[in-house]
Image (tube, rainbow, N blue to C red; front, side, top):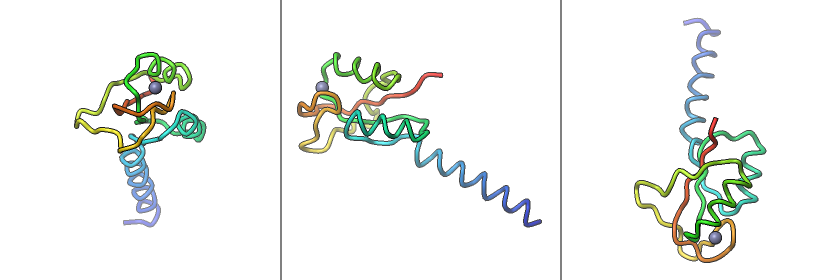
Length: 100
Ligand SMILES: [Zn+2]
């Protein structure tokens, strides 16, 4: 195996790892989500949510993302977590994704 080939293989692997690690990132606030997107992140974002539709809509507008729903695994926010949008106690985790 040539060194060049090895380098390409490593780069591809690194990229695949990045996707696996970053495809789903948890943030605590809308500001964190914005900063993450501004850094070039592409993938889904999870954040704590109070369960009020208005907050979901606000997040969609602010981040230019769509709500995919809540985690299929039934994951719940950490104790004491606050809604990323309004700061009320979080009841659910909401998953957002960019639509292309
Ligand atoms: Zn809220």
